[in-house]
Image (cartoon, rainbow, N blue to C red; front, side, top):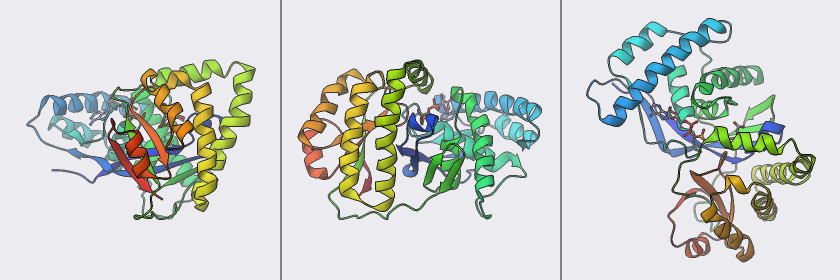
Length: 312
Ligand SMILES: Nc1ncnc2c1ncn2[C@@H]1O[C@H](COP(=O)(O)OP(=O)(O)OP(=O)(O)O)[C@@H](O)[C@H]1O
Ligand SMILES: C[C@@](O)(CCO)CC(=O)[O-]
C-alpha cells in the first residue's frame, strides 16, 4: 500500500535572508519524491525510516498535547500503520538542501492530521500562514527551529513567494523555455550538510554590526532583486544580480561553502560561464548554479554532473 507522492523543493533565493525578512522563492522539484508505504518486509534503510517514524509519532503526540489548538492527529491509525511496518519510501537525498524532512512532514500531515487544511480549498493568506506554523512545529523535530516552508512547498506542490515572514503566497513563475540556453542547475558537493550548525554560524555573525550592514545593503538587496527579476522574467537583470549575489556570498558566507568549491565559485564569476549560490543552508549537499549558456557551464564544470532544474 502506497500513498500519494510528495516532492522535494529548491529554495531558489532567500536562504538566510528569509530569517531576516528578505524575499524568497521556493519551487517544487519533481525529480525526487517520497510516499508513505506500509509493508513489513524491510531493507536496512526502510527499517531506519520506520524507526524514525516511530520517534516522530511520539513527538507528534507530545506536540498535540502541548498545542491542541494548533494541530491534532489520528494517532491511533498512525501507530497502527507504523506497527504494520510503515516507512517513507523516498528518493530525496537527506541533508542535501532539497527538503527530505519537509516531504515527510507533508506526507504525515496529509494522511493523519484531523481537520486538516486541504490543497483544494481556497487558500487564503491566513490559511497558508497557519499551515506554515503547523509545519514549522512538526519539522522542528528533525532539525531544531524550522520555518515550515519546505513542508508547505511539498504539500502544495506550488512555487511559494515569501514577501516577508508573515506574508507568503502561492506564486506563478514564468513557464520554462525548453529550448533556451540558460539554466538553473544543481551541483553535487559530494558531502552532506547540516542546517543547524550553519544557521548557528550565521546567527553568531549577525552579532557584528559590519555583517548586519553587509546583509542588509548587499545580500538582501541582491536577493530581493533576483526574486523580482525571476518573477518578471527579466533574465538580463537577473543574471547581473546573481553575479553580484554570487560574489557577496563568496566574500561573506565562506563557512557555508565547502572548501574545495571556493576556487570553482570564483572561476564562475570571473569567466561568466556560471554563477554559484547556496542551495538552502549550504555546508555541503547541493550547490545551486545559474548559467546563461548551459553548454559553456557544462564545459567549465566538466568534472561534475549537473542536474538541470529550470530552463530559461
Ligand atoms: N525517508 C525517510 N524516512 C524517515 N526519515 C527521513 C526520511 N528522509 C528524511 N528523514 C528525516 O529527515 C532528516 C533530514 O532532514 P534535514 O532537515 O536535516 O535535511 P533535509 O530536509 O534533507 O535538508 P534541508 O532541510 O536542508 O532541505 C533525516 O535525518 C531523517 O530524520
Ligand atoms: C538557511 C535557511 O534560511 C534556509 C534553509 O533551507 C533556514 C530557514 O530559513 O529555515
